[in-house]
Image 1 (cartoon, rainbow, N blue to C red):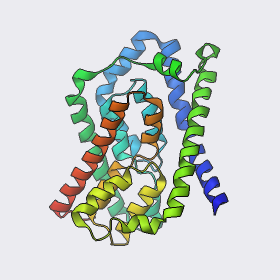
Image 2: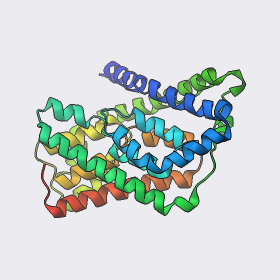
Image 3: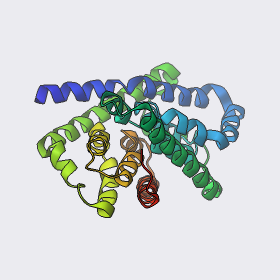
Image 4: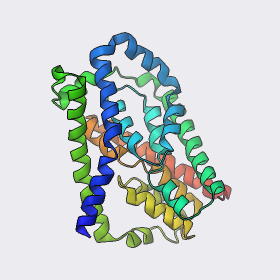
Length: 281
């Protein structure tokens, strides 16, 4: 069992490497090659970022959330775009629904709700925090991680990628061992038969930066022991390892807490609204 968990943690972490490397390569290029004009063009294009982020996030992986955390730490994308990616990220939800023959109609509806909430929240957040925009901090991020940028953008991007990969691997392994010790059934039982409180708890479970969170939430709903509200809250607040990466690369702790708070609040609010509306999938 221990060997299986180590292998699963390694494989899951390895899947993030292409996304992390691409994100860092973009950041290094902007810092060393593109110049101020390119950076300003990206900032102007950021107004439509929540749509792009929301669409990319619904694909069945959490690589985009990891990449988005790095891009946000360098202030390449806006807070609204980051939140759109986090809220729409599906992690293991889609593969489980497909394997359980949930039906195309149900899957499309769930993804549509996640996308709608993600994009809407992203635009609203950018509108509210439009006066708090910060200049790009790619150079600061580079210095913080001692990436030796003078050796070229490819080498620097690889340095960043390896560092974050090892960080994710260690934390993921620890979480997987903890969840094995607790048991997924015990984790699921925490939110059973609690209509309102269950939604609040499901949102907290979703914040766990591990694929087990989306697995538990999705399976409980498909088995009929978790309501629509709990399912929506848990799947919206779940961002894969996105939060984990953000905590590592963004040194503004207060801002990180605000992101986590917004993620949880939006997920729970959407879950409560779904529960009250009587929506079904």
